[in-house]
Amino acid sequence: MASDIVRFVDDQGIEYYTITATGESGMSLRGLARFCGVHHSSVQKFVGGLNDAILDTARVSAATGRTATVKIVRDTICADTIAYYATQGKPEAVKALVGFAAIGIRSFIHSQTGWTVRAQSAKVMLSGLMLREPAPWERLCSDGFIGEACRLTGYQWNWKVMGKFLKKHIYDRCGSDVQVYLNEVNPVDEHGNRPSKNHQHFQPEARAMLQQHVKTVEDLMRVSVNAQMFEKLMGARFDGCNQMTVFDI
Image (cartoon, rainbow, N blue to C red; front, side, top):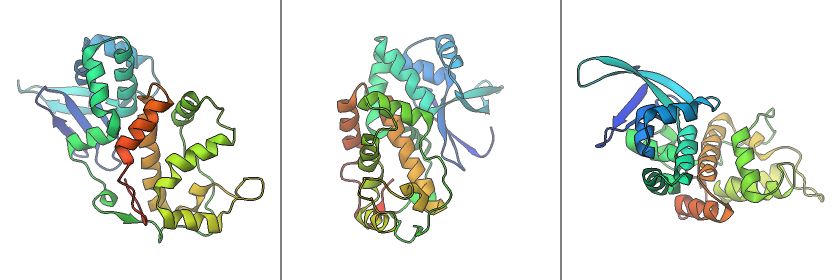
């Protein structure tokens, strides 16, 4: 197995993987099938119809001494798969969904593989990682995030109410000092618009943490049946975590 992929096998034989450099995570296809309570061929067929489902492959030595190539299913695809089989009434999938939904599947796998990014080892001050002049625009939210936000709220992405959604679940988690700074350098005009997008005022290191948070929120949206469930999971994951002067991830 490549040295830049961390592997963990739990007591049920389910394999979890995390790419050391990026934190991207996933599960083995067979392990995901066991999680869902179905045959691995069923899961293989399901994920085969999804875009970008395979995160990576790993060479793993089995107990027999033989080495096999393992397909690592991307964590967000794992969430979609488990949610699908939960709706089909598979008790293992329902149990799994309840077990890790509150902390997000990526955070769950990180807890299994023991992966931490340097920024996660301590509370990170963001006040020194902000930009007065906006950086060139780069996309912050994926198509998956946008689709899930529209599904849960019932609003189209270009509606102004979505700005309130992002503020509540993304920027309000950054701490009061960052919010004050953003309101100073990127103020809201009389029509409720800002000159630039808030994330353009984050330096690369801070933007990476912001994107990681966005990904966690997307994971929680994916496993939420409705907006009420999403709010409950957000509270379970983040309430009590936010600090006034830091971004808690």
